[in-house]
Image (cartoon, rainbow over all chains, first blue to last red; front, side):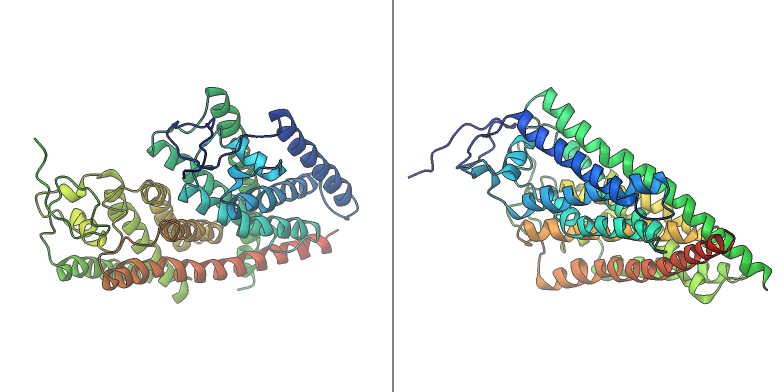
Length: 222
Length: 222
């Protein structure tokens, strides 16, 4: 006998999701919990970073960003990567609810599109822990703090580029409504475009300035 | 009336390629031209770089690599990105022949898989010109020469990772034979894994050493 097919809210309508169970939590609950959790991470990291000597406000903000994005990569995106059946969950598991809701902005998540899984896999497994290493590197002023931040930010930009370009090439028709398209797909993802870009520019300048100084010292001592 | 369907040599067999025209050139011709062209690029760049003062042999080798990989990205991969109908070419256009032949190692090229097109698009349009900028940056000892090389190498690694992971997730069944799988898909691509890795390690060390020196100068002058 076939598994009962419950109508899903995703586009394209002919996407087959046998065993789909609708969201238990409201949009407000799902977005609210993420918002409050993120605010707690920021507040905690801002307070903690204040106890480290010689850190500028910019460095402290970066520590907040890296802890927020690192935990998002590891827990939120990590859950997606290793839970192919998240849309079948019959109990209100928060992380499954997030992806049931987000799939309204991009059904490739529920459809387990291989590009989305690959990019999210690299993000969750490699970039997530690297973000937490960046927090530590900034706090303790390690010499690799700038190059590490450039490396992760470039990874985030590359992943987001592949994510958007593949969608466009496949017809860009994965959102349940213009509302979900804009807020979930465009707006939410835009943070992982403009913030990495700012960080790359900042760290690029720091690195070139350091290399420039060392080049000059070497020229003088010759 | 349907377009005449000529049997193609690719796997999966049920891949539809209406209008397919088989290779005109032999494998030896296709690989040979690429080999000789690459050797010419290396020889030319090695000779040219010898005229720049203060360049180590390592720097000169890197200039050879960046010109070779940059031209490969721009011309070979650029042709693929902007020629969706390469497999229909009725005359022996060298660049079309390359991709007809390479598709025996990975039919996603002929099938115009959106992940492959996205990754190749980023590689051809952004990384290709950036590679030539790296040649110039090394030759003229620009302060951004290390960070630029890390940025491009990370892009190459990320692209190769997405390229392999999506194939695995989709069953890893895109090669016409174990021979093509090994030589075209694994061996040829492996150069864009181990060479970028070596470059990242080298430049990472240079950058952290420069940042470390500058950190110490700043601490002393306080």
